[in-house]
Image 1 (cartoon, helix red, strand yellow):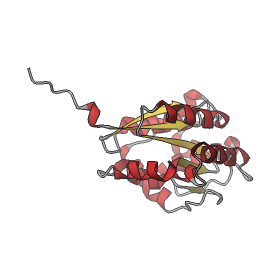
Image 2 (cartoon, one colour):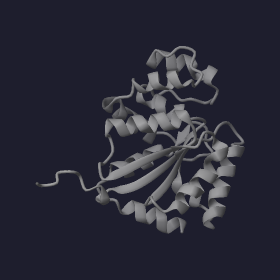
Image 3 (cartoon, one colour):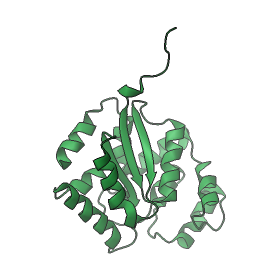
Length: 209
């Protein structure tokens, strides 16, 4: 009998350390929608808070089961102390000054900056959930958003392959500088995740080693 199972060994294993539930559920939704190239086998780890990201990153990197380990988090409001601490610890871990810039996908000031781009060009300037709740209600129907698990899952139901394309265009039009309010480099990684050429994985690893 011919084995028709896919050759999983040919897939490129990528791990993404997610800051928390919002980041984890969002990326999980995009994986479910199969909007990225199927050659990438992406596994998610929920760090359960930005303070846990450096340790989770180091553990997964040293584990050696993935070809690449990335981070997905937000910057929060200025002066971005915890975010800068994450960057410093990743740089120190690799012994490379800008290693963190190679492996961190960020949303400034919050991940909802990226998620909201599925429906609107509106720019988020605050990470505060009460401030952003009216916008979230307008586009997802979720009232009084506080980041509860049930609310996050409801928001994810509103994310589709069609509005993914809209998000991709919008997120590419904002600043990629993490020190700028209302910025994100997420679009750069979307292009890589969609790419048929996987050489970028090796290139990132060479720059951080």
